[in-house]
Image (cartoon, rainbow, N blue to C red; front, side, top):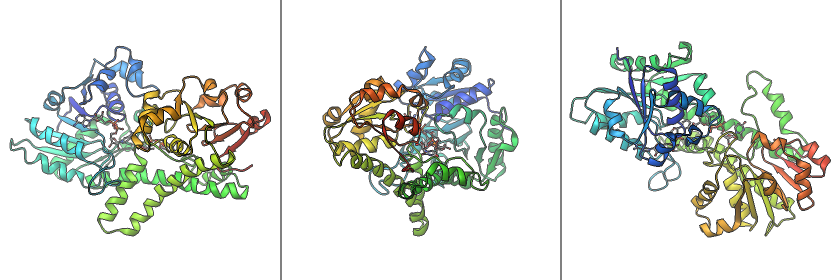
Length: 466
Ligand code: NAD
Ligand code: UGA
C-alpha cells in the first residue's frame, strides 16, 4: 500500500493554493510543495505578511499561516518538487482555446501536456498523478500516453480528482465538502492509487463523502456539475425578463419553487449573469465534446445556457441605456463591484466587464469601486477584450477606492457584485451627492429597493418591475 508522505502540486492558482493549504493543514505528516512558473505568484504566497497572499478568500490566510514553512511550501523549483513527490497534483489553467481547431470552445490543454512532459522527463520512480484541473473527458488517456513513453521504467497511475470549491467560500468548501470525487483505473494498481488518495482525504473528511468512480465518470462529472449549476442560473435568469413584463417578482418565484425539496433553494438567485473562470469555459467544452462525437442536440441543449447568460448581460446594459433616456454619452455611471461574485478578488468572465464594454461603446463614463479588485486588474480585463485601445479604456473608466467618491455626481449606479458592504452604505448621503433623477440598477437584487425609493432613488432591480 502506497503511503503518501510527499505531495507536489503544479499550479499555485485559485485551486492549487487553497486546496494544498488545506491538505497541509489537515495532514501535518505530509510535506506539500506547491510549485508554479510564475515567480511573482510564488513570491506572493511566500510574502512575510500572510495577508498579501495572491488569492483573497475568507479564512485562507489563517490556514496558510498555520501550515506554511511547517509542511506547506511554495516554490518555483518545479523539477525538484516533482522529483521528490510520490503524488503529483496537476492544477494548472485549462482555458478555452483562442486559436486553431476548437477555437472559442475546446479546452486548451497546452499547459496540461507541458506538465505531463515535464513529469515524464524528471521522474525517476513510480508516481501517482492526480488531475485536479477541470479536463475534458478522456484526458487521462493522453496524459498516460505521454507518461508511459518515458523510457525509464517508472510506473504512473493517473487519477481524476476534480475540485468543486466555489470562490469566496473556498475554505469552508475544502474543510467540509459535500463530497470528494476520485476516479481511477479498476486494475489492482489503479485501486491502490485511489486508496492512497482516499487516505489523504480521510484525515478530515468522513469516508462516506469520498466517492470513487472510474476515471472517465469522474472527469465527466466535473463538467456536468458545473453545467447543471450554470443551467440553474440561466434558468432563473431567463424568467427575470418575463417577471419584468408581468409584475411577477423573481425573488418570490424563486422562493416558491425553491421550497419544493426536489428543486431546492440554492442557486436560484437572479443576477446580471454568471461569471467566473469556469462555468462558461466548462460548458463550451462540454458543447465541443458533444459536437465532436456528432451529438448535435446535446451540444445545442447546453449551448443555450451560455446564450441565455450573454443575453442577460446585454439586456442589463441595454435597460440602463433605455432608462437613461436612450443615451449614456458622456454620462457618469458608477459601478459598485467588479469581481464576478462577492468575497473574491477574481474577475475572470465577470459580468461587470461585459456591461462596462457595452456602455463604453455608447460613450458612457464609468467609475468603478470594488472592495477587493485592484485598478490594474480592471484595465487588464477591459484591454483583454481588445474592443478599443488601452488609452481609450483609461479615458472611459476611472477606478476609485472610496464608494462615496464613485457615486458623487453620477447619473446612475449599477450594482454588479453582491458585496455585503453595499447594503450598509449611507444611501441618503449618496443620493444627495448624485445628479437627479438618481437611478440605481441593481444587478444582484441586493439593495432594499423600498428604502431607496423612500429616499428618492429610481430603482430597477433584476426580475421585478414593482
Ligand atoms: P489559475 O490560472 O489561477 O492557476 C493556474 C496556475 O498554473 C497559474 O499560476 C500558472 O502560472 C500555473 N501553471 C501553468 N502551467 C504551469 C506549468 N507547466 N508549470 C507550473 N505552473 C504552471 O487557475 P485556477 O483557477 O487555479 O484553475 C486551475 C484549474 O482548476 C482549471 O482547470 C480550473 O478549471 C479548475 N477549477 C477552478 C476552480 C476555481 O474556483 N478557480 C474551481 C474548480 C476547478
Ligand atoms: C463554481 C462552482 O460553484 C464550483 O462548484 C466549481 O468548483 C467552480 O465553479 C469551478 O469549477 O470553477 P464559482 O464559479 O467559484 O464556483 O462560484 P459560484 O458560486 O458557482 O458562482 C458562479 C457565478 O454564478 C457567479 O458569477 C455568481 O454570482 C453566479 N450565481 C450563482 C448567480 O448569479 N446566481 C446564483 O444563484 C448562484
